[in-house]
Image 1 (spheres, rainbow over the protein chains, first blue to last red):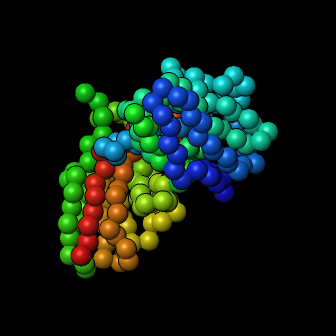
Image 2: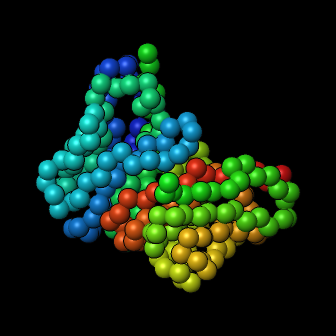
Length: 111
Length: 114
């Protein structure tokens, strides 16, 4: 079974700075999908970014970008120009037939 | 507005009672999911359904039951057999249950059993 590991339970960053959240996964599949979801204090889960494993180009969405290293099975999320509204739990997820979530990283953006 | 609704937001029950959590979606999605979220454990899959009248157990199905009689609805019953039912429950849906598609989440239901 696929597993997803987020090794940083908590992180903090100063407003306007850059932060990188780590995610590793374990799979024997060659084609799959990776996601980062954000869960702010309201607890509403929303998609931040999606990456298809067969695409070598890293996905970007405005201030959010990923560093996808397929051989290393690593999928980190970089948040640039951090804003107070980025304070949330961030979950990495692996999709192949079903979806597996990591335990999450609690990010706090400090003013 | 398309989306997923869960009701109620907060639910309180006495131990030994069954309770049903509602989940409705108007996104025309085929697949629907129930997750349980506990502190420090991320989201754990309880049940999922890829099509009407069919559903499969997830990783922690014991003590829970579901039905999928309509495409739009996927209610979850927490039975008295669930040993530790107090948790935050999230319902989600996606275009298909292949792991390829984004899952859309409801606002969640916080269940407290005393």
